[in-house]
Length: 122
Image: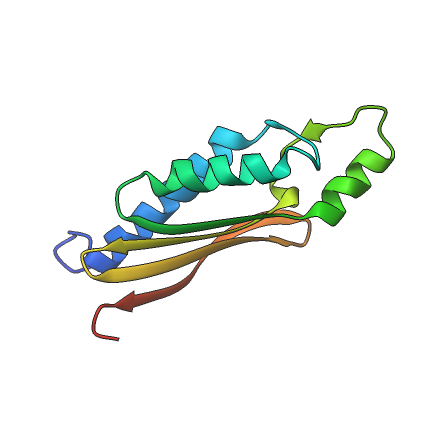
């Protein structure tokens, strides 16, 4: 943080990206998902998060191999959406700073992280 304790534009851009990820994850976690419904759920996730201010791009991919493996041993033909089924990238543009964030599985945990922060002069 800058010395006057006011967040820089780059820090605010990262905060905005974090808000988008929190919304995406907690809004959709627990949603019933099946291989047949995955494409429409992906569209709903992408379009709902892209509606938020400063969000320029959202890409959601369902890890179909993980989803199908989960369902292989189940008597149900759907399961609950969790982070282990998703790979997500969110791009935020705030005051000239482009922030790329990503969620991937790491050591069995859906880890969300800032990939890059670039200013408009790059």
